[in-house]
Length: 289
Image (cartoon, rainbow, N blue to C red):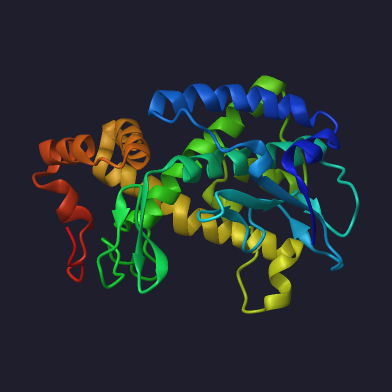
C-alpha cells in the first residue's frame, strides 16, 4: 500500500477541498459545542491511495484502518479501487475521508489515561470506559447477535460514528451531493448514516476468507456488520434508555467521552433509572473503581 497525507490526497480529488472545508466548518462548531476544541491535525492522517493487489478496495470499512492512540495519528484509505491511480467518485471519496476524519477527531479528543504496567504502556481509561489492574474492562461484551448494547466500547464507537455521519450528511446537503447509483449508493448512504434495514439486507454476508476482506465484496460485508454491530445497537440502546430524550442522552455521552467525567451522565441516568450507570454497564468481573 502506498500512502499520502490527507491534504495531498484532497489536492488530487476534484472538488475534494470544497467538501472537506464545508464539513470541517460543521464539525468544528459541533465539536466545540461538545467541549472538544483541539482537533486531530490533518497532517497526522495518512491515506492509502494505491495498492499492488488487484481489486483492493478502500474506504471507511477497509480492514485494519483507523486511529492509532500511541502514535496520535490516523491511517485510512481512499474510497474506491486502490489498484487504480484515480477514482471516478471523487466527491464521494472526499465525503468518505471527511467521515473518517470526523470519526478519528473524536477518538483523538476523547479522554484517556495511560500507566506503566510490567514495563509496557497500558491505556487504563478511555472516554467513559476503563480497565482494572487485571486488564478487564468496565463493561462485558454484548451477547452474540444482540440487537442492543450495554458495552461501553460499542456505546462510544456508536456515539463517535453518529457524530461523524451526521457531519458528513450536513456537508453533502450543503454542497449539493445527490445520492448516486449502484455500489456508490450504498457507500453514500453509509457515510451519511442513512442505510435502512432493506439496504442492509441487500449487502453480502461476511465469510471467513482473508483474501476477500480487501475486495469490494468484503468492503460491503464489513459495512453491513459495522452498521448492525455498532450503529444499530447504539441506536437501539438510545431508544431503550433515552426514549424521547435519546438525543439528549447521546449528547451527554459524547460530552462525557471528551471530558472523562461521567458525573452529568450518571446524574441523568440516576434521575430516570435509579442508580443507572453501574446498573447499566458495570460487569460483575470488573474489580476497579
